[in-house]
Amino acid sequence: MSHPQLDEHGRLQHLLSLDGLPREVLLQILDMAEPFLEVTEREVKKVPLLRGKSVFNLFFENSTRTRTTFEIAAKRLSADVINLNVSTSSTTKGESLLDTIDNLCAMNADMFVVRHASSGAPFLIARHLRERGLEHIHVVNAGDGRYAHPTQGLLDMYTIRHYKKDFSRLTVAIVGDVLHSRVARSEIAALTTLGVGELRVIGPKTLLPVGLEQFGARVFHDLRQGLRDVDVVMMLRLQNERMKGALLPSKEEYHQRFGLTPEKLALAKPDAIVMHPGPLNRGIEIDSAVADGPRSVILPQVTFGIAVRMAVMSLLAGQGAQA
Amino acid sequence: MNLLPEAETLYARLRERLAPDIDRFDALVGIHSGGVWLAERLQRELAPAKALGSIDISFYRDDLAQRGLGRSRVRASHIPFPVQDARILLVDDVLYTGRTVRAAINELFDYGRPARVELAVLVDRGERELPICARYVAHTLPQPLPADERLELARNEAGLFTLRTLRDEPPTTR
Image (cartoon, rainbow over all chains, first blue to last red; front, side, top):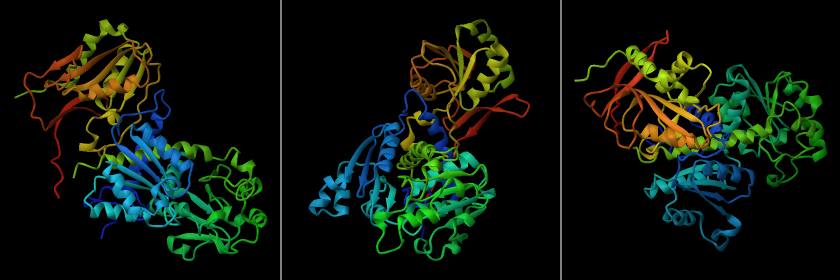
């Protein structure tokens, strides 16, 4: 069976995850983001590509940055954007997720951008739309549980390509709380698809899932060892809100062993870049001297993220009526 | 039956028609791909001091829902001069329905309000769907081409132009 995000012609119908996303489609999105970046630098930061389309931002879990960048991306494509936050919506009155979706479909939605605490929620919505024969409505996963955050993974790939070009020559390290991180899962999927030279995963045993070696990753439990000669350092946020039980001794100890300091970063290649998906826990996983330092590309990541989301939305919207 | 004249001959004719008027413009802007090649060469040979821009109209198309963005690579538009109050010569290889030019004018206006926009094309193949007309034309086809036939400019390694016709791909079958 084909992946539920592709239609019968292998074209992208929804963006649900980067696992099983063909390399050509991934590259197509990255290529398309480039001209959109130019649009965001213009006097009038807007093109009429999605004029008249209604994009619903459905955030069942809080997020300011991701929701805002999706909103900006949709508005720069001239779409109408409707933001729904769960705290103010009828799910708190007991309405089920799919009832909410049916209602929004009845309001002639064209696209749903979905963030949900449960892994698989965007898949459920995509399947429901197919069952209802509403395949012209597209779903973009904006982060589901611990599973996937595909647009973050794509913008990270865009960022790496922007600064480093050829993936096959790179050593990339993902550092931190991989266990709870949908960002890490999407990054690993994309880096594997793009054929990264060497993939390293660095973190305490309690915060790394088992079986990472199956993805071709080299696992390190010592940051200093793992950072040696890497080209790209991808930091993850320590996700306090998702942790159950005593996975960590203390934040102080975490910082001492796994926090990125200028001294530890000196072990990486001299031109290594440092990435972080935000929001930053300064003084825990990353020092301010690194986050604000010359190797940090954390703010360019945000800018690239808008262009990448514009590319994803226009690719999806351009695939509605042609089949 | 249309016999296509040689593209280099047409280019020379277009350049000749433009030469006396070139100072009416502050900048040349080519439309991807053929128009960009033409604008580059016209600028180089007629007015090297004038600004040169390029436009990819993919984001301004009026048929996204029907055709998508396609597989061809979208390039960033590049307008390295202030559009506000500029006198702009838009350059394209082939003028047909007028929709591409409409999109290019819309895009230009998102950079500012030009003082004037005029159009130069190598070939006018007729059958306009919008009230658009080029001031500088090297050749007008006497008869319409079949609708599924695309006419476009190609450029070889030596930088020389040729015109070629392509059949549109039939729609994908299920």
